Image (cartoon, rainbow, N blue to C red; front, side, top):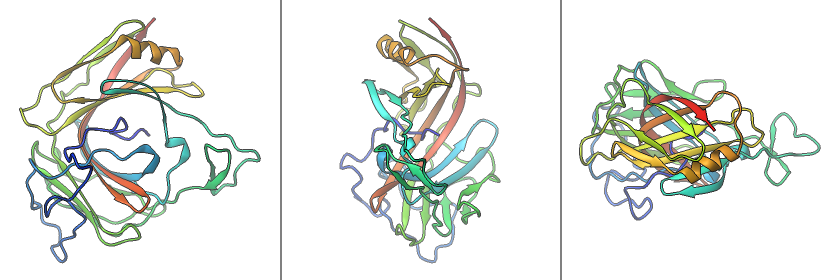
Length: 300
């Protein structure tokens, strides 16, 4: 699955993740339990943007989809090679990302996966991070790793699970990765129904969505795929400022069509804030988001 901020959202911390105040780093409130309201200022807490795909070990998503709010997450001890997408085009806030499928001969064993250099590597294993706590939601959430697989999820939150502008904080205790402390800011919900768009070869694609209050820290990600059955399909991913409107150029639309058209096109729009933290040789991410499906048709 494509991460929410695969295009690499702009960071609100121009120093690339420096911890400029007591709320920005991997500090754990020892013995504090799980208070509903975390300490910190949602207007200034550092949001360090998305992890690079090449080092993204996983992360957590707190998503409302109009019907319910849920938390899900997983963190592995490596990166699955096929999830590292190749950038084959870009313009402004948009990128064209291609999925390449590695080939290994002989075939890899069941506990291995094929790397892009044609060499089998151990398949990344999801890790137990201990109890993960999320504060700042409508109800505090504490999650343990679910077996098998060490996945984290909470599907019993009140809905809506967060309010626009509220500070959200996710922490985990000291594990093999060290302690985690990631932040988000509650985003305003997108319109109840996602937009309906027609992607036409040779034409720019205008997009609109409901506006937010001035000063909101959210951005809006749009992803479009029109080649579901392709061997190396392209996905158009844009991460726009949350201004209520944007446009994808005709040149990028033509490149998208050039990658092929097959199956049913799909798209989504996601209003989000994104934070990340380096852990060893990798990176872990937190997204707080409102997500809607987009109805898509294509026209040559």
